[in-house]
Structure formats: structure tokens, C-alpha cells
Length: 627
Image (cartoon, rainbow, N blue to C red):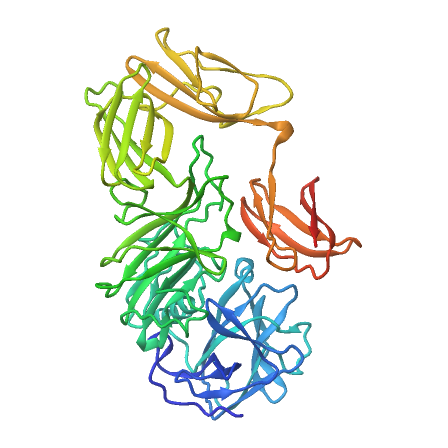
């Protein structure tokens, strides 16, 4: 049917003058195109329904072009926005604008081309690797032309150019009859990014704005956390209502929901006040556990989120995690959500909060978040640990200072009251019983200690603590790791003064005195140097070169198609392939950095398959059995 334009109440990003606002919606189980007021614009029988950030999107039928005449739409100039998934193996036509059978503008996953003026603009490669917002503008259109035609997911017959019809996800499509200002474009980009879980390019820091132009995600206040940005929120001027969200670049890590997670945003009955948002991003660190000598360890990646708007009285905010995207915990350990709600840029004893994750929604793990405060800023990540453990902070005194240091302890899990025992080498003990999960020793001297805790139900946890004044200036050789290559490794501390005393802490917690250590097994080592009343430390890792495991596969026994988790710890990029028994490559993926990957090769029959990872001239090979 032809589209003649409309007068709308809401405006995308609060920007007036939109000539065409196409939004995917669900009507009677079918994907349709509606306008900003929800009025049906077009129903194309070949289209199918899909999802992006719990919002409906449309996948056009590849061999059935969708053609929409724009009757009486005058375009002296234009600005166009579109949402699409650009992870495609070939160049494909996402949309075209022209007349009859002739295209004037064509937008692909690689570029936008002005065919009338023979001009094109290539999108950056980094913006062709996932769901994105694409926009273009033009100021010198033919004002006598008023019979434009829009092709979505296809292109007209002329001119003949070597691009395929689009068969990916299509979100909203917006057309304005003027060139928008930078602020207007930023407001529309923000609206689309929040709705579809998209990350605006932060190579030049860019704020997210609501329809009134207020900042809802600040590039400066959230510096360092500009990766995989997402948010929940409500903005009535934009008809934006996003009650549950995840980054469409990595769905499931994490998902934040107002109330319990629903199948879609439309079926989530929770609400937020108008112009209220919670937005977050991550620091782009690997999704791997930190190396640790204790039973507990934190995820290397950290997220930071902030609240804007009216938050008084809000409750029931939950966060969900897909365990298939996470490295598994050690045997006997579980996942814990850890947060700092004090607004700090690092985890502190004052703002520390921990809660266990439980399987609640299908395969997802869930934990409640605290009730928000006005302009609250939250730091959060995951830990793996037993049902009872503790996290410590050491505020060390300077060398030569007369005052002692401060040891702070946060208990995680278990049941109060807790009995704490701090024991130093030589048998000096400090004992305390606490009814809350926090304990501090305001006058603690540096040294080597054992800290133990027991809860009301008899659970126990014990860990060695090295409370040093700082990092040592005497290094072994300045390396962070060493290799055992079929022979013992001799380590020597650089000599300091003749009065310096050296102690080595071995992986099993035992200690060795002297400036020389002969190592015959891998693990974490710590060198302590005590000199002139000052205790300093240096930690490093010894690896077994003959038994290094850069790859670990964790099969999913429930998911179809041979899906598995890959924990990749190598810092260099590599290429993964899954090969069928007949030698056919059925799946490829680039491993660009260390992390946890979910591999979904889509295997449709049982058999033996080969997983190979090539890095330069080296290749790692593993078997995958699908039954």
C-alpha cells in the first residue's frame, strides 16, 4: 500500500519532522511495519519475526522484495536512519531509495552509495561486525521529484550492481526531509541505541541523550566503560519503553530487568518513571578469571552503570547472566555478583555488596540488585567462590611510618554470627565474633598471616594473607612469568643491602628462606623482602611449558547443534574452524582476544567433528563428538 505521511504525537529522540517512521511490531503473531503511533503501514507476507534486545525486528524474505511507495513525500533534503545486523558474509542491500525501477541511494552493510551523483562512503570495518545504526544525509535533492519508492531488504533493477538482497535483521527505519543538526542526530542515535541494545561509536566520546537532550549515559563520567553499552528506561516523548535489556553485541552478558525477565519488552509489565534510565557498559577486559593463589577469583571484566531521572521508591531490579558465556567456576565454587554502590571507580570495603547467583529463568542465572539512589553509580562484576569466603583490603603503611595499617574484611555467604581468627607466624592470634559481614582491624602491622572464618552453621574458610608495605624494588628479573622446560628453574633475588631477608611463598602455602630458590613445579610464587623494617612483595607465575593448556572446551549437553564454550587464554589472535567428518568446513570464527566464547556451529547430524585453532604456523586440534 502507498504511504502518505502522518501527524504523530511521539517523535524519535524527540526530533520533530519525521516523514516516515517504520517500526517492527507483532500483530497476530506476524511481523508487520507500523508507524510511530502504532498504525499499520505494511504487512509483507514473506517477512519473518526475529528479536534484537527483546524488541521485535523483521527478517525480509530474500527472494520477495518489499517495495513501499512514498506518495506525496517531498524531499528537498533528507536524513535517514536504519537499524540492521551487518554480520554478513557478502555485501547486501539493506535499503534503497529511488523511483520506478531506478535507485538514487543504496545502503549496504559496507557502504552508502549516491548513485545519482556517483559518490559513496565506506563504513568503518569495526561498524560491520554486529547490529548497528547506519545514517546518511543529503542536502541537494531534486525538489521536482515527489514519487519516491523505498525498497527494504532488496534493491531495484537499475543500476545493476554486484550486491545481494539483504537477509538479516531489520529494526526501525526513519526518514526526515531535512538535514538534522548534530544534536538531533545524537538524540535519535541514543533512542535507537537504547531500544535495540546498540553501542554508539566511542572513538570520539559521545553521550547518550534523552528526548529533552539530558545526558543518560555520560562519556566522561563513564570513561573506560564505553564497550557493549545498553540500558533500560522510559522516554514518553520518543515512545521508548525498555524494561529489560542486554547488549546486542554480546546478548546475555549481562541482562538487566525491571522486575522479572519476560519473553519480550512488550510482555514485561514493570514500569519506570518517565525520563528514568539505568545504563551500563564494560571495560573490555577478557571474560576470564583473574589468576589467583586462593580458591576465589574475580572476573577480569568489570561493568559500570549509572542511574538518571526519578529513582525514589524503585525496587525489583534484577540482573541475569548466561553461564554459557562465562568461564566455569572451580569444583565446589559458585558464581557471585559483586558490586560497589558507593560511586567509586574501584571496589572498596565501604561500597562492597555480594549476592549469590541462582538459576531462575531457564538456563539464566539471576541476582537482585540494590534499590537505586538518585544519580547512583554502580560498579559490578562476578566472582567465583565457595558458599562461605571473604574479601580483604589492606591499607598499607608507608615504609618507615610509625602508624600501622588497616585490614578490612567483607564476609561473603554463610550465616551470621561469624567467628574470625587472625593468626600471625609465631602464634600471635586475634579473635572476634561479628553479627554483620564487615570487620576491620585498625592497627595491624605488616607481616604474613592466616585469616580464618567460621559461620553459625559450621562452614569454614581459611586463606593466607601477605600484608606488605608495597611492591618490592628488588626483582627476580623483571618478568611476570617463567617457563619450566624439562628442567628445574633457578630463581635469585637481586641483592639489596646485606641486612635484607628474603622469604619465598610457594604455591602450596609453604615458605622457603634465602635469596635463592630452585623451582621444580609450576604455580604462583611470591617473594617477600624484609629490609630496615619494611616488608615488600613481588608475585609471579611459573608455567609448565610442556603442559601449557591455551584452550579448554566445555560442551553443552542440552543445546542443539554441537554448541560449546571455548575458554581462550592466548593473547594473540587466532582463527577457529569446525570441520565435518567429510572434511567440509562448517563453521568459522575469529578469536581476536582472550576470553570465553560461545561456539554454535549448527551441526545437524551426529558424528565426529574436528575443532582446529590456527595461529600463524601453529595449529591446535581437538575432537568434538555429537551424538
